[in-house]
Image 1 (spheres, rainbow, N blue to C red):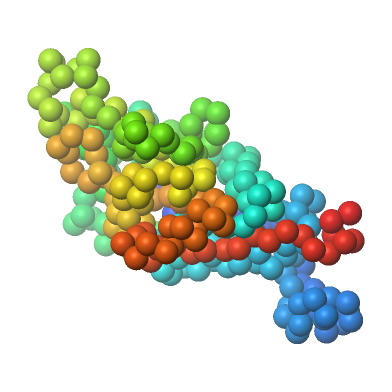
Image 2: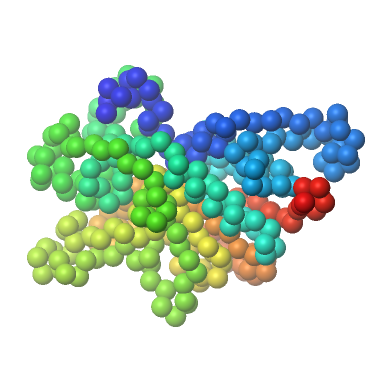
Amino acid sequence: YLNLLREDTTSYQLAHERLYHLLTKPGVEHIKTEEDARLMRIYGKEVIKRYAFFKDDFFGIDQTIMKIVRYFCSAAMKGEESRQVLYLVGPVGAGKSSLIDAIKRLLEESPPIYSLQGCPMREEPLHLLPKHLRGQVEKLLNIKIEGDLCPVCKYRLMNEFNGEYEKFPVEAIDFSIRSRKGIGVVPPVDPNNQDTSVLVGSIDISKMDLYPEDDPRVLSLNGAFNAGNRGIVEFIEVFKNDVEYLHTMITATQEKSIPSPGKNAMIYFDGVILAHSNEAEWNKFKSDHTNEAILDRIVKIEVPYCLELSEEI
């Protein structure tokens, strides 16, 4: 894996950076509105960028798409956006879900990436490197290593491989919506039985009589944040959930870590959190000042109806 990185460091990319490169790879067309009187009346003197990836499916919402790509551009450069949720809001039928589906589909069709074999978080192999060696490897490869091993892989490294990280097998993996590989989806949950195991997994009760409760072998890391690590976690109709249920978002964005079930340490998380809902729910959520912590971690992008007749046709 290290030899692969010496040839091409693009194998090591954080989730936002990977998606930004995938979105812009098909090409970008720059449209100068000054050269078109009709577009000038609609957009003013702004230069419109039309991204080839969205061109065949989305019409009349070029400015919205520009804002979405701008979010990924800033996040790819590790700006504040890399620690914030991308939130789409707008009327019913404006295309919020379709935009997110297109981004998920793009990830499914992307080239495979490398991960530790058997890791429930499908994590980056460079997490194996001990802290004292990372500086040298970063200089050698000209990259910045971020993140730590999950409790399951840490246990396996010490017990299966006797701490010899170079013997830990690495495999190529792809992304899949149906198989929950790198794409986790959180539908709105009934407030009466909200269970955070949907987000961060749970403790496998069948193993409780074999191992103590702080043993990583009892962890069942199959929540949406576990599945969406290094990819996407989508919250459908996000504000239909109780605010307590959304608190995992705060650590997942700001600290880039999620709670592990039971009594284990926090787990490093690198993923793009996408959310969408209708305007009424956004206005209700925004009006409650106790939701400040989550509001501060949201990049809101409005998805309007298409109002250009020619584009609508």
